[in-house]
Length: 169
Image 1 (cartoon, rainbow, N blue to C red):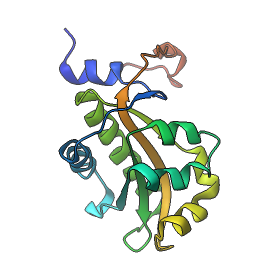
Image 2 (tube, rainbow, N blue to C red):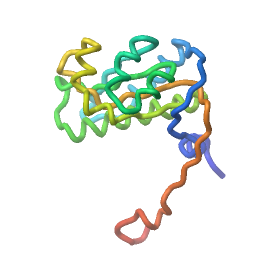
Image 3 (cartoon, helix red, strand yellow):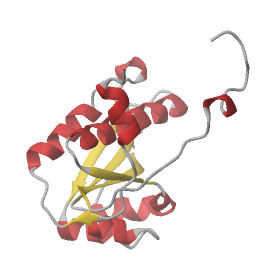
Image 4 (spheres, helix red, strand yellow):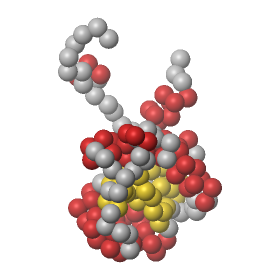
């Protein structure tokens, strides 16, 4: 029997086409709230968020080849790592990744689609500049959020192809 979390994880997909409906503040806050509950080393919680709507998100769309996903989304959440609270870059980046996964899953549970954008990172300094964000905050991802206007299908590699060492599991 599949659990609710298993269904949620397996049904989440990257959505690149969104309907033109507004997302209420309460849903955005719920997504951020669940993101902040991710695990982090020493509980340093190195993630920081910047929520963009309308013309604000359009300002950053020019910094990626996937700008249309940003402009068509209803909301973009820029996720930053705060260098002032970091103690181990690799571990802290993993924590931010866990935070992002929590947000993606919370959005899915709210029937919202998301797309985790990373290609924009080649211009992360420009994003900080346009948004007037201090350099101590390094952009790690942009999450486009909106009501889904597509239902993509995705496959995964068979588990036995992903296990490096065969032993008793």
